[in-house]
Length: 218
Image (cartoon, rainbow, N blue to C red):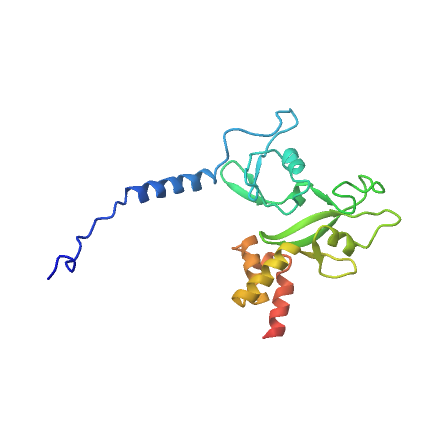
């Protein structure tokens, strides 16, 4: 047997680098599950706890309620979690008081005041289902609510008094998954539900609609 045909000696893999990366990864995961020691909001007397962090911001900071609402004026579909002293709990910008104004490039309509009620609508995006408090334009020449949603790239579920909308992002995302992976609408919506709440999906506001549609298909 020639030397070229002889089997090469097996080298023992070095797992030290892999173990070092594993420890680094676990440390980072645990670090993201506890609040930072430094509060990044304005140090004013009225900025008191509880403090919160955004799941979808690339540079999450520990902020008070007032600061986190101010920071997300144009990002109503970000997910918020609140530190309760022991662990993080899910929260929402709508519950914290954020109103997403449409019709005036993010600014409140001049024809409304603080006593004008906003409408809570359900919006589906890539990161889950959201309750969004929407402040409509109520000017004399204001367009329909459906048109105001389309202006911010949200597709209304109905043209008359829309209460549910879908972002253009998620529609394009589903179109590509359906074309390439043959993903069904039911499977896609179920995945979005579980991104929102993987424990009690039946308590989500659109669950009843999905269940009724599933019964029709069966």
